[in-house]
Image (cartoon, rainbow, N blue to C red; front, side, top):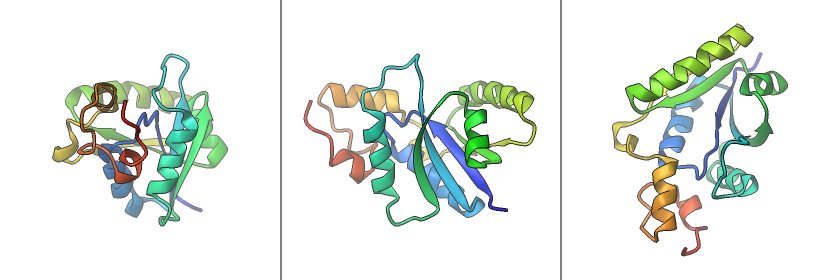
Length: 157
């Protein structure tokens, strides 16, 4: 049986912090599905298709990584793709508190799917998509926070 994990998020845009978590989860799983969740309560800066293309470009030479777009409950999407694990990145204690609440709810919905937390590399703790979007909107240099595959596609705002 393949060990499949889902790394869910909005990835708006995918940052070096996200890439760090994906890269570090590769030795743990046979397949890492980067799931771009469509969230009705969020208005993304970039289309889901653009975000998916970035994942595909970044991991074009890594067959263990697959990008996808999904809607609805993450735990239900895990069942669709056969994932028994959800991977989440933690930067701060506040991230853990929020993520643990979601993990507890998911465990209540399906005890067979486990959430695994990976702490981010310290050099990426300040990298948040919200901050990166603000830098991009205001014409700042976001290259320090983004994979080259993402940064090279950004047009000056």
